[in-house]
Image 1 (cartoon, rainbow, N blue to C red):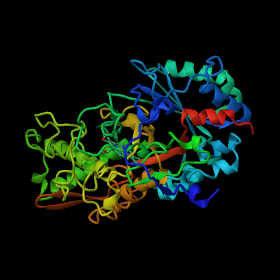
Image 2: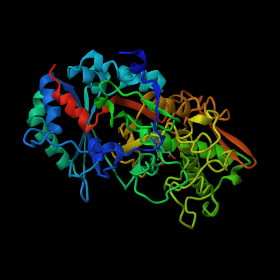
Image 3: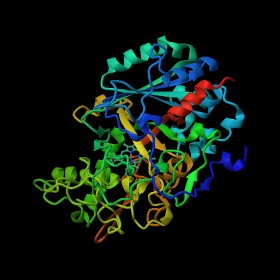
Image 4: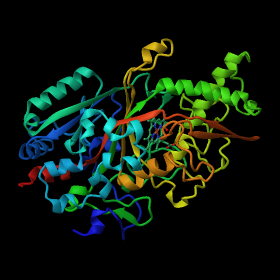
Amino acid sequence: MSAVLASNAPTRDAGEARDPGVDLSDVQGNILRGYRKKRVRHLTAQVIDAREARAWIAAIVGPDRALAPEITDAAHWGKQPPDVCFNLGITFTGLQALGLPDATTSTFPEAYREGMAARATKVGDWDNSAPACWQPWFQSADAVHFIVSLHADTAALLDDFEKSLVAGLAGRAFKVCGRNDGAFFNGDEVHFGYRDNISQPRFANISPPGKYDDQPTAPLGTVLLGYPTALEQLTWTLPDPPVLGRNGAFNAFRVLEQDVVAFEKYLDDAAGQLLDSPLAGELLPAGYDGDGSPSARLAAMREVVAAKMLGRWRNGTPLALSPRTPSPGQPVSDTDYDYIDDAAGLRCPIGSHTRRVNPRNARIVQRVANHTRRLIRRGIPYGPPYDPANPDANDGVERGLLGSFICADLSAQFEAIQYDWINLGLQDPRITGSNDPMLGANEGDAGWFDVPTAKGTIRLRGVPRLVRTRGGAYTFLPSISALRWIGAQKV
Ligand code: HEM
């Protein structure tokens, strides 16, 4: 097989750069659809018998429900998705453990073949985020073969599903090595108190019609293999045979621990730094500083810091539309905004999380990269909500986000965002050398974050590392046809 194929180099696509349409029944449901279930369970599993594992894969896409549950695809939902939605991600070592020949596995792209742990320095996983510190079941990258993802509204549904899964054919095919459970609290809130799950790429002919914003729709090749991408006339090379790749996607599955105690403390520190600045009045929200007492000013400024770090107020209101208050008085759209008319970042700082990870039409240095690194995000928090009234109860409690970052090319999308937008800040010289204030691999006291105002920029210093990686894996989410193909292999 040629080296070009193996490196997932882009190839010229003679077709028009428009979505040719997709058979939704051939695509795993978690890629293009948000299930909106309250709970998730990700089972990390290791193949124990290749033949039984291929038989199990054939069964989850076959007609006999006595053998195995049906994988959830993106069609056939009727009015609502099944009670338990069930999807399968396979790592590179998983493809090998299934007995697929080298001639096939070697045609997958390099980032996926190497796996997440081997790419640690590219994505900022060092110090206490290094693979050696991950949850035990992720530490030996070779041992992670499948991530089986279950979404349901209750823990009982998940328990029952898992029990019947492993009691059947699956029990002879693989063993479950680890379990990562997550659950929403307060609607779409995530730890740190922000509303999440608002902005996603929209796909022509697939996302519900209606005007959301003026951002371009994402071509299907942003997430599915085999279609035109946002890079003009380019599609990613399919693995060989093509049936294995087409309609599949890659997933960077991440267990991200959030240090809420450090985050809340940093809001105090940074709000203090801002209040000490002669420019504080440029930032305090209009009509939001209560009685003007020091504690009211501190409380208001803490919310400003939280909003500037993310790019949205904690209630989800975008800074780009409402820079001075989280309660604008008139409805503002969740996603209908751009940074093109905020070049200096006066409304939304250039270094904030959401502006880094999706610069929209902002004039970034890598101009051609706007809109090319879009990701589908499926994230559900894990661990108990932080209780501000009882700070001692938060000590030593692990909480964070179970995040799936789904795309067509791990290197050009997920890793590129992590490597040079979240960390390093290469998209704009004004933030180069700084990391994402919420997510970045900040070390010691060196982290900084600039908050521009109309009268000058205030540099916040001492931004700590607030998010630590606890595990993860690069998986491939094969199409239904690809799973059938794997299930039919006689090797
Ligand atoms: C603990 C980790 C993380 C937390 C708490 C977090 C939180 C958030 C929140 C609250 C939003 C705003 C809501 C929305 O626009 O939907 C957001 C947006 C976003 N995040 Fe994160 N995030 C995390 C990790 C990541 C990572 C690792 C990536 C990518 C590698 C990422 C990429 C994005 C993207 C692409 C958006 C949408 C931006 C837009 O389209 O405007 N996030 N995140």
